[in-house]
Image 1 (cartoon, rainbow, N blue to C red):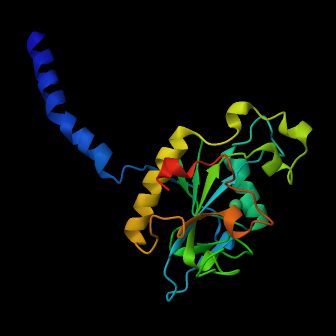
Image 2 (image 1 turned 90 degrees about the vertical axis):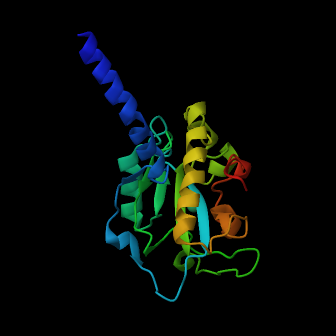
Length: 214
Ligand SMILES: [Zn+2]
């Protein structure tokens, strides 16, 4: 019995570095495939490199204030409206890939960066879109719901989680390996509210850019 225990311990010690290496080697960020149908995106133009990245928030808080982060319901909204983003980060930090990076997603819509290259009404073609499951302040959500409906949302569902910031930071670094023109600065990594300030409030004032090093 003692011998068996000893052998088991030896094997476990020998395998430990293997497990550790496997966990840290695969790009740190674990990605779960959750593909949307192709009608929500289109192939990229070969002459247009990916130069920008946009952060968004999304939820189904208007339909399900008590369960605003229902993955299937969120994806159904994307499908129903024919819109999309490449990635969606859950509250626990899980990264879902909705669309392959070699396709253009419909996440930015009409707008213009407040600085060159502006990308007026053409942001999608040069970018990656990342959605975070999140909800803004009452003022930021006022276009979707009144104060009474907003009050039904749990406080813990407002804003973003530490797990999301950690995954987002790793995901951005991972994306930059494939698209080095996305520089780590606020000219290349922007919020939807900066591109379309008259229409959009996401990711909004609760999103802490410092937590992803920006
Ligand atoms: Zn958005």
